[in-house]
Amino acid sequence: MPRAVRYKRILLKLSGEALKGDSDFGIDPKILSDLASQIVRIVELKVSVAIVVGGGNIFRGIKGVSIGMDMVTSDYMGMLATVINGLALADAIEKKGVDTRVMSAIEMRQIAEPYIRRRAIRHLEKGRIVIFVAGTGSPYFTTDTAAGLRAAEIGADAVFKATKVGGVYDKDPKTNSDAKRFSTISYIDLIQKQLHVMDYTAVSLCMERKVPIVVLDITRSESLFNVVSGKEEGTVVK
Image 1 (cartoon, rainbow, N blue to C red):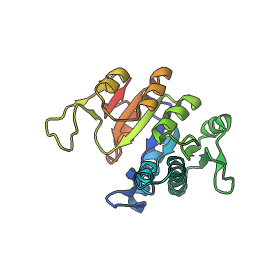
Image 2: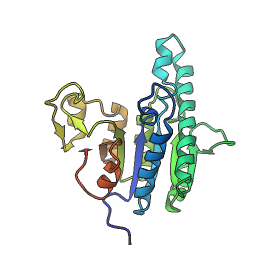
Image 3: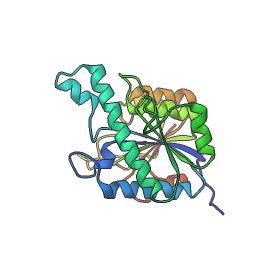
Image 4: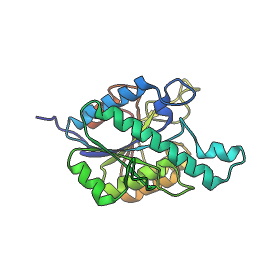
């Protein structure tokens, strides 16, 4: 029998940067396989998993703007980058024996299902992993905001924000050896202290819907499993 879990349905927010490992660009096959293994392991606990994936390892909308591109065009290019990552992640997960569905906010029926809320929930109920790509489908919104929005729409118990640090700290732990990690922190404190874990639109969405945000270190192979299993790991924003 599956062990008791703290969260029955989660929305995992994966950045594009998480897929590239130590490379400057693209997708690291080993990182991709390791992430897929972590995700499959919690599905085996009968946890419903939906994923929003970013595209920063391929193209970031803000980067396009910095070189003079139109903001809307640049954002759409960033959305297309998330589709590439979503397809790669779906392939890696399915090779480990779990069914997936890629659902896109921008219609492209040859490679992904159009996002329909009730259909996404039905996939989750059938034990499939649903990967949401193309952000919200609109420019000016980040994939963080897409994660908050989709979490609310599918009735997720929590948003898991995957990072490369162990949670939310009072200062940057990479440059400050005395940085202290919060085990829990309120949405309001997160905003007032200007701790940039997710963009503030996403945090506000989660706050309004009372969806906790769990910030964890995805580079630790046990982190996802530990949080789902109820062990203390990372930071809970609530």
